[in-house]
Amino acid sequence: MQRYFIEEQVNPEQFNITGDDYHHIARVMRMSAGDEIFCVTPTGKSAICQIAEITDEMVVANVVKWEEGNKELPVHVVIASGLPKGDKLELIIQKGTELGAYEFVPFTASRSIVKWDSKKSAKKVERWQKISKEAAEQSHRNLIPSVQEPVSLKQLITSAKDYTYKLIAYEEEARAGEASMLSATLSKMEAGESLLLVFGPEGGLTSEEVTLLCNNGFLACGLGPRILRTETAPLYALSAISYHFELLR
Image (cartoon, rainbow, N blue to C red; front, side, top):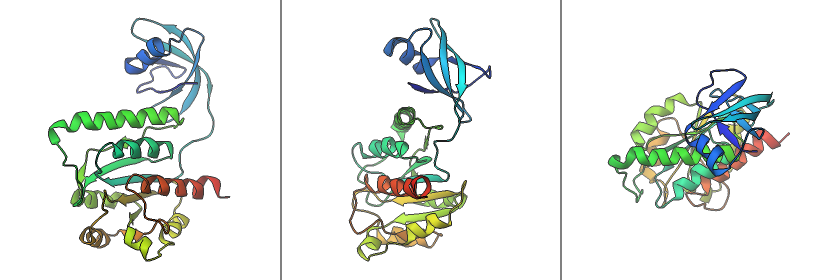
């Protein structure tokens, strides 16, 4: 069943679907009255709904049954990625959303090859957010992870005070055999707390950047004995977090 995130719900037992989602239901999927879909409210509640009517501008769907349970990680994991080249960030957003990330914060690092064009900022972020939305629908999330406009490292450090825990995935720690910091941090975390995870671009973070982050409350950690690509490391970390909180009993 298709899943749709509804921006506004006027009637508590009915959804009015417009915009791109209306087009997808009526024109792409060619659904009709009687077909069932999932609708998710702005607060993250989801329901099985039956389409009652499709007009020229709107799909009207009635709630059949509200879903129970929660598909979200019990902790908020924020992925801060040094801007990588090509479409690697899109991959991180898509797969990271499937794995439970709460938010994505790209930042410009010393070794970032890509130079951020502020003139194209709005269009680029809009595309990233669309990727996040589609991945959230596909993976049956209860919320859409937000994707922020790229920030500087100093801006990232300033915003870091809002997070409960802050870690840096640093390949030098992996080379040195560090293997306990991520596990120890997850063991301390409680439901509702947040974790900001920082990953470098291709070539990693410089020692100066790592020192600056550590001087501002971040802790460096390894992600196993192998050196991971910039697009692989966040997905590894999210998988480990999911295992710790959702599968390890």
